[in-house]
Image (cartoon, rainbow, N blue to C red; front, top):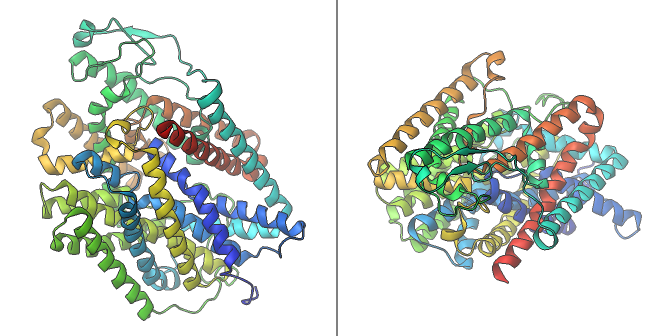
Length: 598
């Protein structure tokens, strides 16, 4: 490749910013709905290629270059990954715990500051993680191969773009019809069981819809099911059956939760999740921290889920590595780190009235945890943002006990730093595989973080103007918020403030989480493939069963298609699933804002 090919062009950055404007709300929406986000690198690459190829064919633009496309995806993906800055977890949890709700300009500044720190840390780690060690970084490898593939096979790439666009239009149409014209039925089997114990004094029967068992006509959930795969889908279904099918009626019978709306089709999610969150959160937190710790026991193979057919990344092969010179830290890197660190400390003191020494401690803690997260992402492809946050919460809980504001804000620093660091390391991997300039990617990442901070903050405030009444509801389950809030309250009040029966559930959930995470890391392969995913199992406890069912169906349909239409699935399945996620998210953000404000 000619090193003089256009790279950091105005149109590449603007294209990334525009796609960031569109894709960032998607992750805010899905994060508050199901607690997961979607890596937008490949989606951004496909959309930009399709747009500029069309413009070139109309003689309205010069050809779109590979290096420009990399700048575009770096900008767009960093904007979309802004949710690691706290918008779907610690920030709303802070409002629920303390009542603090930052105005828009302060929220933008806070999200930008914690994410900006991650950029400079990633730049510092470029040499040890990508040049000397050459970590696999599977997500970066996948993006690089997609970029090379779409530029080598332009017609095939356009077919994927059309598939993505068509599926996005269908998903948006379904969402708009459901919101404004024809409320689609939430189908459920007409099955009910007699109420027992304490519940029998208020209700005679418990129906499946009361326990949130129904089919949700959501293309987004089906699309996410396709992306997560059958193991996660089955784990979600198992967790839903255990939590909402077995434990929920038992909770009602014992009087540990009482229902308000007695209508036959009413959802009792809000009442039941107040108890179910304890075993679910314990399972997720203990499993995440255990997996996090076990990652340092021996060498961890990269996560190749979703990377079938891609060649191994061989750092000594000139066909794979770009041959760029070794990067050496310079004054710009350390100046960036110092400026970002001062900004983060200042923001904590000014916005949250955090003690200056606590704010200062939060920075090196965040940097250490972000380095660890970068290593984990490099080895496995999975950014452990949740585990990083909980480790920081537990650590800060011991340093500044009884202070939930400091607990959540300092953990937010760790999560935001780790999230952007992981995202940029993946982008650096793409750059090394196609011959891009790291400093130009840093500049693109800064534009993306600024875009994501502004758009993400405004979208969050527009979607959730009243977190206390809107979150942890059937409409906005916000499972990540549930987790961060529960840990902060536990560190503030101690386990003694939790009812005895819930403490037993916490113990059981924690033991199951540790056992599953340990087995998943140390058991033989033939055993691991039979085990449920601990994070997915715990997640099913804090989201309605309807969401778990819909994602399972998506995973099941994808498995059938991969079995009987393998070639077609390899070409179009992820593009269609991405379109479902993006289309419904964008339409959902628009309709939700209109419903809230008008």
